[in-house]
Every structure is written in C-alpha cells, then in structure tokens.
Image 1 (cartoon, helix red, strand yellow):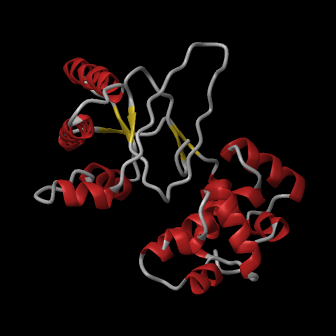
Image 2 (tube, rainbow, N blue to C red):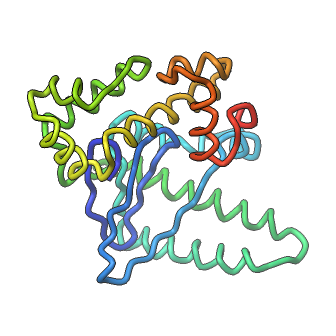
Length: 229
C-alpha cells in the first residue's frame, strides 16, 4: 500500500517511494516472499553524478501518483545480473570495493529510469481507498497543523465513530491516531530539510508541545530533529 493505492506485486516489480510517502507492505506469510530494499541519498548521488538526475524516476512517480514499475523480461535479466554483482561486491573488502558498489547502484538507477521513461512505464494501482477514506486522507493532509480527532473526522464523512475507525484501519492498515502522527512527522522532516526552524516545523505539523514532537520524532527516525537538520 502506497499513499491511497494498493499494488499487488509480482516477481521483479519495482516500487519507487520517496521519503515522505506513507507506505506499508501487506505480506502473505503462507507463501515465500523476498524483497530488496535500497535506500538512496539524493545529495550523495547529486555530488557523485552531477550531470544527470538519477532520481528523476522518483520525481516522475511522485508527480503521477503512481509508484509501480513492471520490468520486461529483458529488464529482469539485466536487473538480476546487477543485483547478483552487487551482492558479491558487498562481501568484497579489497581496494576500491566501495567505488565498485557505487557504480552498480548508478547502473541500476539508469536502468530503472529507462523503464520509467517508456510509454506505459508506470502501472496503475489495482485498487484505491473507499471514497470516504480518500476524502479523510485528503483532509488530514491539508489540515495537519489543526487538531484532528476521530470524532471530527468521522463526522466529516457521516460515519459513526466505531464504523469509521474500523473502516480506516481496514483500508490503511493503521489506526487514525498512528496515521495522523506518521503524516505529521513526515511533513516535519520535509520542512526541516527545507531549512525551516525545528520548532516552527513542529508547530506547523500540528504538535502543540515540543517535548512530544521530540520524543515521537526520535522514536520514529532514530535521530533528533536537530541531527536531521
């Protein structure tokens, strides 16, 4: 699940998710499942390869609101070769090992960008949220600095508190409180990265007390807001 969409995944599918997007994997534990997660530092890539934007595919996914790429058989073979080579290099402690790792990451991103740029590169989601939940999510995103209670949100979509909470959890995989908290924290990280003072970022994100913001931020990201800044 990414933002307001659900994507059933097949082998070698690729999801491009920016740091501020809310997402969650819903895994069927009864069948074998393996995934590769690659975290990318845009600033590092910008310094290493300044002549092109290797993260353009992420911007494209964000703009279109579609995050899934399905590689062709030829692409899958290429990706498999790259991943196998990367795993071998990760065990290498000889001279230049880090540089070799970087070159494989660059090759991987070039391949993914080419897939994204093809006609029909991004796949539409299989399902989307119930209209009332979609309406709620939009309202939350637009009013993060304001108090957001379950009763108020349920009333806006004309549902009882109990039914609203049950439907929200079923659709998003999160409680109303945890979703709002996660969205506020992600918004705060965006603001801090843009240079907004930490205390103002906390206030703009809907935290009335800085101590609560600091505690939740550190629990979620493992660093303090000032360390992120």
